[in-house]
Length: 94
Image (cartoon, rainbow, N blue to C red; front, side, top):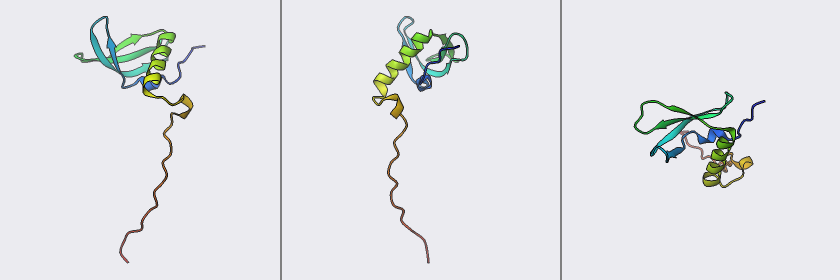
């Protein structure tokens, strides 16, 4: 059975920096359908996305780091809170 990483979809749109190749790019997708998970990255200056394979633990670490820095609420509470509905005013012509 595959080990899926919860909340991995939150990485879509996140900027990454590759210090080894001195480049940065934006995550455009996450693939957990194969034996080796991967993220698709659109590196700046390139015309297409690159599939970057990660281990399950690397993907889990990346998601955890994102959640720690961008979402202070626990995962169970990440849904938007419902705002009170303002009273509606009636408008129109009689």
